[in-house]
Structure formats: structure tokens, C-alpha cells
Image (tube, rainbow, N blue to C red; front, side, top):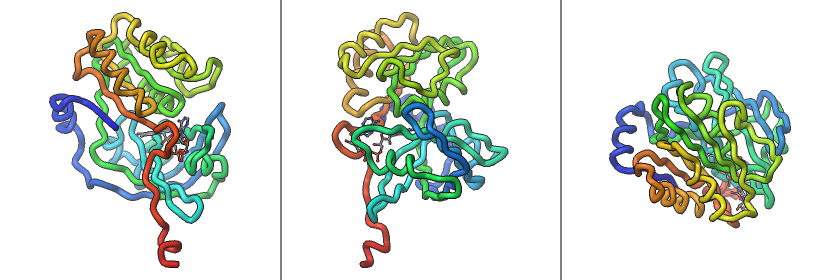
Length: 256
Ligand SMILES: Cc1cc2nc3c(=O)[nH]c(=O)nc-3n(C[C@H](O)[C@H](O)[C@H](O)COP(=O)(O)OP(=O)(O)OC[C@H]3O[C@@H](n4cnc5c(N)ncnc54)[C@H](O)[C@@H]3O)c2cc1C
């Protein structure tokens, strides 16, 4: 689920470089380490990460990883951060969640030298906050990497607030020094999150990425609280109780 108004969409599409609907790449794992509840993978893919393609990868850009598991290929979205278009490398923070799925399982087992298929889908939209904006980013541990990347790319004059739905004390890649960070426990429920988000003063821009059923009510609450519709971008990042993404038979299995 992703959402923006038609007006915002068309103005952003005009700034998006035209490219094929799906581009296929292979990522090679260079290094892995455990970072709080994530495996941080440093991956290399000079065909995707190079000075010619840097305009295609807006902040919050993500890839559809083709995760092998149980003889099938599972399509899962993961955000590219810390991109270095000189060396052809980037990082992916893959959350360990419970129950685990193919994506989080693969992250734990990945080793340097491993390769994984990935697809870049066209039409990814991200509207940067304007200079001096009161920017609000709302997410959870799955979208914290995207929020960290967005903060790094935001104009230095922005006043940035982040509300993260996470267990207090959880580590995330969000840089505490660059923003005002509010943590809301998932156990506190939707009303507590809405309260935390709508009571931060001086916001005129919002980017939301949460569990799919939580993103839309939060957007509605922000609009009801006075944010212009066009200033609120939102996306569901995962679905409670069910996988997020398609599963396809691999050719070996399909041929068997
Ligand atoms: C655009 C986009 C960018 C994303 N970027 C990242 C990223 O950088 N890092 C990252 O870790 N995730 C990211 N996600 C979220 C990730 O794709 C989903 O969490 C995905 O469901 C994980 O796949 P899986 O195979 O591990 O679990 P699935 O097979 O999809 O699900 C298995 C079980 O785990 C549960 N589950 C899935 N995700 C979570 C979660 N986050 N918290 C709690 N339970 C969960 C499901 O409800 C299900 O019960 C992104 C999603 C999108 C759409």
C-alpha cells in the first residue's frame, strides 16, 4: 500500500527519471554484522550503484529481494541505505522479527560472497521535505533504515521529528543527534501512536511507513490535525500475521 495525492504524484513523477518497469540485478554480500535487532548487510552491485544511476535511487529507495527459501523464491522489500556510488556498495538492515519469514531467516544465514537476486521497480516516489520544513517521520523497526536514509538526505535547515513504534531501548539506525526521537511501545496501541504523532507542534510535512493497517488511520489523523493532504506520504511496510510479498516456484522446482 502506498499513497499520495494525484497532484503530488504527478509533480513527483515529472522529476523521476524514466526507466524500465523492473530492472534485475544481483547483489553480492561483502560483509555482515549483527546490529541490534538487525543483520546489517554491506552489499555490492556496481550495475545499480554507480554515478550514472545515482539519480534513480531517491532517499527511501528499496529493492525487491528474491529470497530463496524452501525451494521457492520469496519477494520481499528492503531499503538501500548508506549508498556509495563510487565503490558500488550499499547497506541493507534486515530486521529479525518473530515469527520469522524467509527474509529475516536469510539475513541471519547470509555470509560474505553470497549472492541474491534483486529487482528495482520503477515509479518509486519520495518527496523531500522543503528547506526549513517541520518534517515528521513515523515508522517502526522495519522502516527505521528508510527514515535514517531520509534524514541524512533532508535539507540541513529542516526541524526533524521522528516517532518510532518500537520497544523502548531497541537499537535502530535512526541518528538520535539529527532529530527529536519519540519511542512509542507497540503495546501502547494505535491511539497512543496517533496521540504522539499529532501532538508534535510545527509539522508541515510527514512521511509514514508502518504495518499496513496502521499507516492509513495515522495519515487520516494527521490530515484531520491540519496537515495538507499533499504533504503526507505513507506506505504499509509489512502485514501482521501474513507474509508481505509474492512467492514463486523456482525453475528447478517448477520443472520437477
Ligand atoms: C518499501 C519497503 C521497504 C522495506 N524496507 C525494509 C528494510 O529496510 N528492513 C526491514 O527489515 N524490512 C523492510 N521492509 C519490510 C519487510 O519487507 C517486511 O517486514 C517483510 O514482511 C519481511 O519478510 P519476511 O520474509 O522476513 O517475513 P514474511 O514472510 O513477510 O512474514 C512472516 C511473519 O512475520 C511477520 N512480520 C513481517 N515483518 C514484520 C515486522 N517488521 N515486524 C513484526 N513482524 C513482522 C508477518 O506478519 C508474518 O507473520 C520493507 C518493506 C517495504 C514495502
